[in-house]
Image 1 (cartoon, rainbow, N blue to C red):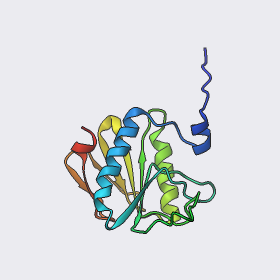
Image 2: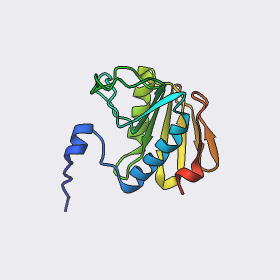
Image 3: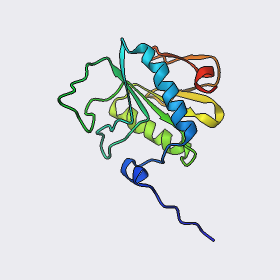
Image 4: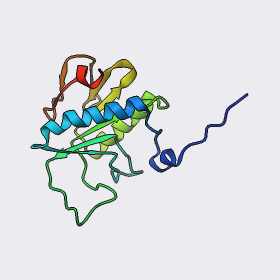
Length: 155
């Protein structure tokens, strides 16, 4: 018997699965680690990037440092981040996130991280889709120079 999967409003609106507990905790830990660089970068989560043919919503975006204009907010970001982070959810396919990385790079993003919670690993992609896998210790993004301790992210 085939089961019918019903998508939540979150999934329909964002075009991606609802995050799990592991996804949410790892996302929070990554943001915490990235905030150590707030003198150089501005970090945002779940920001809609106004891309063609469709907007995309990375789990985390890292921009060159900018000041917020609290009086004039934006619903969709016109400017692209330097770095995007995608965290694999239990109901996602890794190939879908790799396809998203290609779209980000085609639009001008400089670096992309694919976080795989079940494997306690992060893959750093370059715009040429070359990849390096990290699963313990520290990793440093060669484009933005951000270093993250994976043991703290996945503990």
